[in-house]
Length: 111
Length: 109
Image (cartoon, rainbow over all chains, first blue to last red; front, side, top):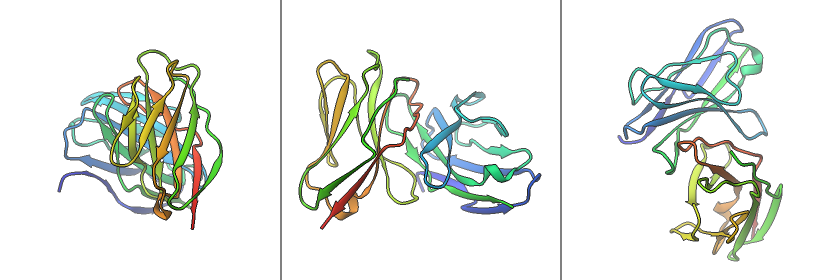
């Protein structure tokens, strides 16, 4: 099915664990983005990518790592999860200066 | 990216037009104005965007002032399902979107 898919939808992990959130899009969009949204707040940009093998920091990149070896995938890794990283994570994709399509989100709880 | 200023919240009667204002006085010539909305905890949904001219699609109209320092999103006949947080964003960086706090629109029966 065409679209943008995030997995898992829900994740509980322990402090200090490494966790990877997956994002897959089927449109071959050049741009992909990761955002986090804390309860009751707006979205904040973590990392973005303009093409395969090109990534750049957003507003809140500390504690996160991204890679983009294939155009359609943009995984986000928390190398050592902390409680402050408990949040809802949204992935998005777009072409330049066009609409962005967002996934349904991954709700991550760090205990 | 230019910053935007939006009212924190607005109410609108069902069936009436909802007019959501946005100030972006520091917008540069190649920056687009985007509008997105977020319903409950879903992923943001694109509504409309424009550069200079007014735009209309099946969801809404976007009115940009001649000096481009402000814009208005118009939902012509608001329904209860339009209750959401509406974000006005200006950007030219490959679609990189920096979200502000948005306007919480409540459509009331």
